Length: 112
Image 1 (tube, rainbow, N blue to C red):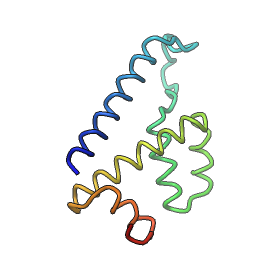
Image 2: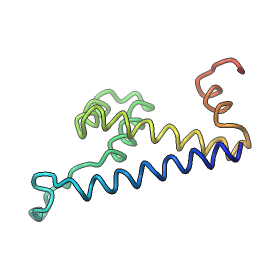
Image 3: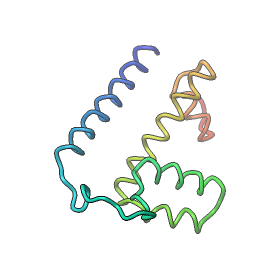
């Protein structure tokens, strides 16, 4: 199990490094311009995912729809996937169970 978690951790580390390189290599229009005082900064993928999942958990359809507009649907899906993976890993460590057992339990699926 620890080998699986190490592998998963390495995978996420690699993804983070990849996206960090992409972010520095790609210049987005308006990315380098200073914001006006009081202007809101754009939301990032993980802020959008956290707010969206929290709104869904609280059955707040209005807030859920608002957060879905902060980033592209693909970016939101990536952020939600990352959040789900981190949550399952954290719960698995807390419960001393495998991530697969925790994920199946959260979804009320029978034991594999």
